[in-house]
Length: 368
Image (cartoon, rainbow, N blue to C red; front, top):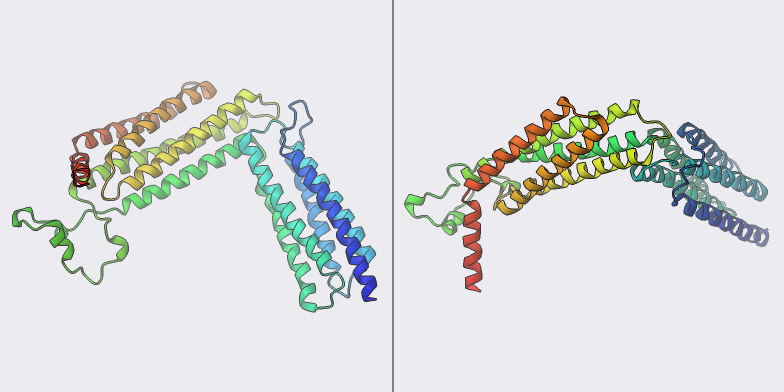
C-alpha cells in the first residue's frame, strides 16, 4: 500500500505541475494590455467567477474532513479547481479593456491574491496525500480560509478608472493628513532650553546640564527655536491648504463617475493618470518639507519643495480645466495654497537659519 500511495503521490505532483505551468502561462497573458477592440468583461462577471473559485476551495477542504481522500477524487477536484481558476483569470484580463495603469494594477493585485492562496491550498493538498497525521490533515481546511478572503476581497476592487484613481488620491490625502498631524506636534523649546546669550553660556555647557527625568527621549532634538517655530507654523498652513486642495481634487474626480463609460477614450484616462501622478508627487514634496522642519531645519530643501508644489498646482489646474472646464470651486483651494506658499517663502527669506547653516558649513570645511 505504501508503494502504491507513493506512486499515486508522484502522479499527483506531475499533474499539479502541469496545472501550475498552465496558470503561469495565463498570468503572462494578463501582464499584456488587451486590445482596445476586445470585448470588455464586467467586474460583476469576474466576481461571480471568483465565487466559483471559492466554492471549489470549499470542496477541496471538505475532502479532508473525514478519512484519507481517494486518489481519484483529489485528481478530479484538482482539474476542476484549475479549470475554474483559468476561467477566472481570463475574465479578469477581459475586465481590463480600456483600463489605465492604476486600475490594471489594482486588478492584478486582487487576482494575485486569489492565485497565490489557491496555489498554497493545492500544493498542501498534494503534499499531505498519503499521510495519516490528524494535525497535518487540518492544515488543508485552514488554507481554504485565505482563498475565501481573497475571493471576497474582489468586491472591494475598483471596477473603473475613476474609482481606482480616486482611491489613489485618497491615499495621498491620508498621507498628507498624517504629516499635518505630526507637524502640529512640533513645539517651541521651553525657556529653560534656550541659551541665555547674556550669560555667555555655550551650547556645550547647556547640553551638559542634567535633564528632567520625566522628559521623553523622543522629544530630544525636536524642540524648535522661536525662528524655527515661525517657519514651522507657515509650513503647517501650507500642508493644511494642500490637504484641502487634494480633497477638492478628489471630489472633482469622483464627479467624473457620472461621465465615465466603458468606451472612454485613452486621452481621458491618460489625463486622469497624469492627475494622480501629480497628486502623488505633491504628497512626496509634503513629506520632504515635513522631514525638513526638525532641527536643524533644512531651509534650502523647504524652499525647493515649495517651488515644486507651486509648479504642481499650475499643472493640475490646467489638467482639471481641460477635463471639467473652469471651476470657482476648484480655484479657491488653488489660490489658498498659493497664498500660503507665498507666506512661507516670505518667512524663509527673512530667516537667518539658512545663513547660520551656511556659516557652520563653511567653518566645517575650513577645519578640514
